[in-house]
Image (cartoon, rainbow, N blue to C red; front, side, top):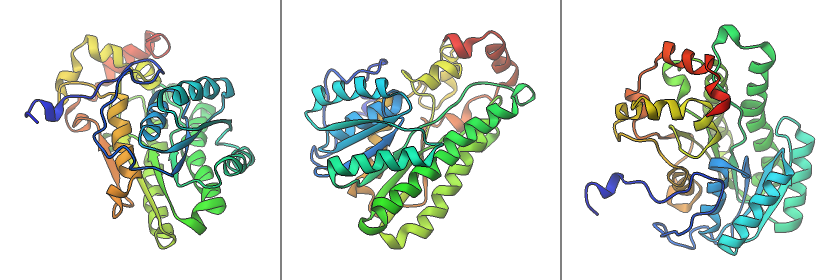
Length: 299
């Protein structure tokens, strides 16, 4: 592989559609016989994680508050990969809906081996303008929701059979990213939870890790958090790899954490951001301009 090739992104599509072509870099059967439960699996990063898992022999359960979204997503995933995919509706803030969804998944697949906590909520907002309810909502979805889903899977499956948990987090808290106190606090708590659960559940043959993406094209987060603005202002030139990432790159990293290749990896956070958090400007005035212009809704 050339030096340039080592940093070139794999093919991806910006929409919530399956890849038009795919070249396996891992063994195609690395997850054969496994079943994965993916919250937020109907769109964005979660959708691509489900696709890449399925292309490596895994059956999936994709869960979201919107049943229509996961129904449409599951049809695309099955058609592209030939694997089974069960779409389910749940709200990670309501444990009873998680229990019902996991019970249904176990009836269908008899086992769940992998949990990807991908359900999240985010938007740009200065702390001074952030309502109490908005802050609580993000904490409830990201932090409480991750605990709720992990605990249900632990009780229903992982305690007796072992398993792998991958929490999708963020680098926002590392430098106190402007306009992100809600999401930064929520994801920092999940990274802490990852370490606690790794310590407590390791003896039960459960690995728990986090993955923190950088700016990723083709996602709701990219649109809502000023990704288009960063493109136009050439801000990605500040990233060591000089570009945003794509969903397939994140999915490949989650595949690594979920697979036997990472059999001795637990309690850690894998940052997949091209070095972005090390060098990108934390430009408070520019982000305020994006927020004030309503770009969080329209880009």
